Amino acid sequence: MGFSPFSAIGLLLANGPGILLLSALTASIVLFWDWRWALSAAVIVLLALSSIGAALHTLSPLVTAGQWLASVVAGVLLGLAGRFHPAAANTHTNGNWLLRLIALGFMVGAWWVIDPGVSLPLFTQGETDLIFWLGLCGLLIVSLSSAPLHTGIGLMLMMAPLQAIAAVLLPGSGMALLVSIAQILLALSCAYLVLAQPSLVRASRRTLPLPGETTPTPLPAQTIQPAQTTQSAQTTQTGQTPLRFPKPRQQQPASLATGVTPNPGQEPQVPVEKSA
Image (cartoon, rainbow, N blue to C red; front, side):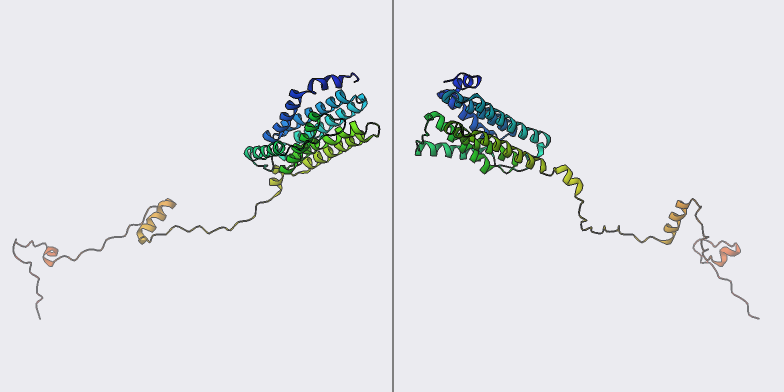
């Protein structure tokens, strides 16, 4: 067992509590579904898995350094894409936390009941379970996600079993380097898809509103007014004095016209014209 800084970190996690801690950290990615927490937790888990492989299988420090570099570069690419275009991570809904909890509980229950007992050569049982757990959680994230950022995080976790197997079972074939390059290319593709998504603000500015059907507004009912009222209103608005017409005189009896006042109770006498 060669000593290196990577193997020193791996010795702290290559035990039961360390494996359970990494498994719980991977499960929290599915439960919380926040891209910042998910990306940070995925990078930490990948670095820890590489360190455990270096501690238990005496891998070359160059191979482990290449795996660390690939994980960090992939995380930085996805993080920069989410930082420059944060609306792309929350554009599509991915269900609520209850749905993800039910899916995660179903996967744990199926693992516990079936208990496949798969063991890989040169791998311990705890390390094998951690590798398959990372792959299943990555597959669950990819199946539930509809945004490229979460899809990239799920693909990073799905590449973890292949990365560990290539480094341990094929140490001198260069397969570990090819897997690291493929991991960076997948992260770069997902980051490009995140940045290529149109922004909601830009789309609203470019899209013109469609003309809607306008209903004519009813005019207020006009009341018919007399001619004098209309004329007085018009003269009041223009500032002119209103015209006054003389009232017609009433016909008076002849007695009142001649100045004779009749006695009370006596009818007024109408003068009779004399004939020639």
